[in-house]
Length: 91
Image (cartoon, rainbow, N blue to C red; front, top):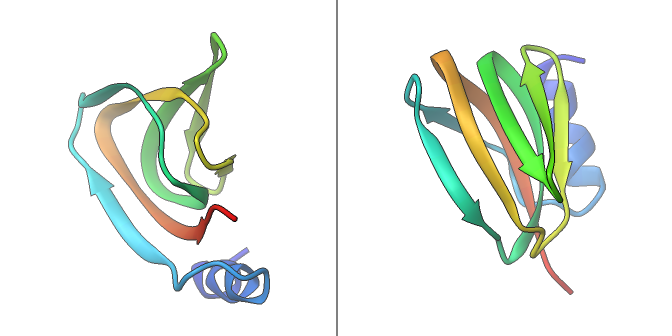
């Protein structure tokens, strides 16, 4: 799926317009939540996301999905990460 196709699919599902996020190499965020649902397409690099004690690594071409208010932590690979993300406010 191309970034344009991903962004169009998000819009069709009621997500806000997608934005590109870049995170620094080796960075991390301790456990936190967001007041919105997020779905993201990894464009470059890698991101690890841990939810409920389970960690998964996402790389270019992968998609991650987090529901609103899901506690999670995240870390970024040696090259950082760049991803296209759509957000949908919690109901």
